[in-house]
Each structure stands twice: as C-alpha cells, then as structure tokens.
Amino acid sequence: MVGLDAKKDFPVFDQRIHGHPLVYLDSGASAQKPRCVLDAMTRFYETDYANIHRGVHELSQRATAHYDEGRRAVQRFLNAAHEDEIVFTSGATDAINLVAASWGRTFLKAGDEIVLTQLEHHANIVPWQLLQEQIGFTIRVAPIQSNGEVLLADVTALFNEKTKLVSVTHVSNALGTILPVEKIIAAAHAKNIPVLIDGSQAVSHGSVDVQKMDADFYVFSGHKIYGPTGIGALYGKRAILKTMPPYQGGGDMIESVTFEKTTYQEPPMRFEAGTPPIAEVVGLAAALDYVAGIGMEKIAAHEADLLAYGTEKLAALDGVRLVGTAPHKASILSFVVEGVHPHDVGTILDQQGIAIRAGHHCAQPAMEALGLMATVRVSLGLYNTRGDIDALVDGLKKVREIFS
Ligand code: PMP
Image (cartoon, rainbow, N blue to C red):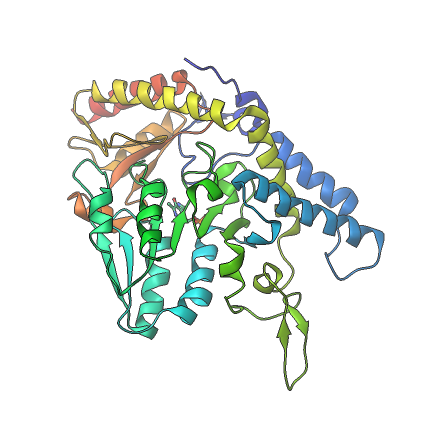
C-alpha cells in the first residue's frame, strides 16, 4: 500500500459533520482545496491584485505576471509544446462550448458526422446538440458494454469519410472507466480526424501528456484538481487554434477596433474576452504546484490502492452491486443498494458524515444504456484513506439494517 497522508493539508477536515469526522467521497463532483491554494489566492488579493494587461502600474504588472505564470503552470502540467496552446476558460463545460462555437461552427457542415460515446458527460453532448440544431450534422454514438467499457473497435467502426471530429471522455465521471484515448486518437488521425478529449475526471488521478497522447484538444476544470471554481483550461494544438475565429467579443481579445473593421489577437488571447478570473488562475497554479509536489505517480498509486480496496470491500457486501467494472478504471466506484433508492443511501450516509453523490451524474445516456435511473457514486481524492472506505462500508451496513 502506498500511504499518502494529505488530510492535514485541507482545512475542511478540521470539523465534524453531524458529529462525525468528515469522510469526503465526492471529489469527482468537486475536490476540496488545500491550504496552499487558499493562501495563494488570499495573498494575491492582499498584495498583488489589479486587472491584468491594461495597466502600467506596479500592481497591474504583478497581476499580469501571475496570470502569465499560471498559463505556463498549465502548459507544464499537460506537457503542452507551447504556452499559447493554453486557453483559460471557466471550466471544462466552457472549453467544450468554445470548441463547438468556434471550431465547430467554422468547420462542420450539414451532412458531416461527429463521434461521441454513450459514456459522455452532458457537457460533451449538449454543446454538440445545440450546434447540430443550427448546422444539421449527425452525431454518432459508440455504445458501452454492460461492464461500462468502451471498446476501441466500437468507436473506430463509426469512422468514415464524413467523420469530422471525435469527442470523447478520458475517464467516465459516472463509472470511472478509462477510455483507450491514445488508441482512439491514433485511429482517428490515420483518417485525418481531429480528436477532443474531455479530461475533467482524468487530470487529478494521473499524469497527462497531451503531446504523447497527440490530442488536438484537451479540456479540464480547475475545481476537480484541488483548485478554485470558475477556472479551467482548453489545450488546443497551435496550428488548430490559429484557424479558429473568436467566439466571444470584448476587451483584451482584439488587436484594434474601428466601426469599419476590427482585428483580433492571436490565440490564446483571442479566446479570452473580458476580465478573466485572475485570482482563480493564481489558485489553479498553486493547486498544480501542490499535486506536482506530491507527484502524480504517487497520487495515482495511492488512489489505485484505494480503488482496489474499495472494490473488494463493496463487492463483498450483501445487497450491493457495483456498476461499472471495466478492467481499466480510475478512482470512481458506482453502485446500487438492493431495494434502496440511491438518494436515501446518500441521506443516511450523510448523517454519518459521509459525503457521496447519488443520481444520474450528468450522464443520462450511460445510465439508460445500463438500465438504471441512478447510482450511488463514490469518487476518491488524494486525501482519502482506507479508513474512509471502512467508514463507508460501516455506513452501508447501517443503510441495509434500516431498510431490512
Ligand atoms: N466532463 C466530465 C467527465 C465531468 O465529470 C464534468 C464535471 N462533472 C464535466 C465534463 C463538466 O465540468 P464542469 O462542470 O467543471 O465544467
């Protein structure tokens, strides 16, 4: 077992919930924040805060330096080749909407096809549907197996000369399945099809290398990797970003404005209209520093141990059925408790200080494919321990007693 003892870094654990120590098993929805992230943001507001780019004064220059350093922190984190390949967005949802509104509206035509999977989060379905209503392309959907796996062959079987984009999740938020994204990208590139990877559930559980993976677009949200809300990033290959028009107009994204003709900045500024979430960039950079300080490999090994331990313990519980048992999984355990609605499971666990999520997890097509309305979802973070899993198991025994 690889031991990580990180709870002490997170102030949220210095409290009791309904009289119990907090057992936080909802990091897939949003992760808790370490003290260093909160301190970095407070320090920035207290000493260096001003608007960026437009000021000659000291504070504006300091704030701009923080913002630019934040971009380099994301570049390092994803191993992007160039700093200008990182566009700050408000999160993964915003990043996918950016690609749909800019790249999609420019390059997709009626009669084209794009490929998604049945496992996608609504954030990687609905932006494409909104665009589809305007353009009239076809969305083709690769199915999932009953164990929650997506087979490479089921994705590539949908490729043809009309396919213009593949947009798939790296890790399923509902089931934890890790998709074979490198192989999907290689197969798509063999047919000159660009690929967007939704990394929302992947970045916090292991290292990501967008160059090695060869993704054309990669998106993630800061709040799921121990950073603040309201900040995320779109990685896009430089050559592709340069072909994309702005999707929002305003300050900072222009080169010059006249009523006759306005010209735009190069990427990434072209896509960052208006005052950005500056303190949130500072917080995100601190979060990326924090995980890098621990080491993504160490975090991955720690969480793999917890996932194996949790899988074994839950599988042994009477009346509990795991949903999503793909061979390659990351940090998520979805399950149903016989005869008990997932929301009731959540409420009873909450009374014991245990935070889990119950519902369709913004992945209704995946739930429907598995014949379910909802599951209970446990999602792990680097601060979780085997003790947290033991508390969950005790909590579930209580749920079973109450409903027996
Ligand atoms: N994709 C996946 C796989 C997710 O898990 C989530 C968040 N649950 C999103 C996209 C959207 O992220 P956000 O709400 O932070 O934009």
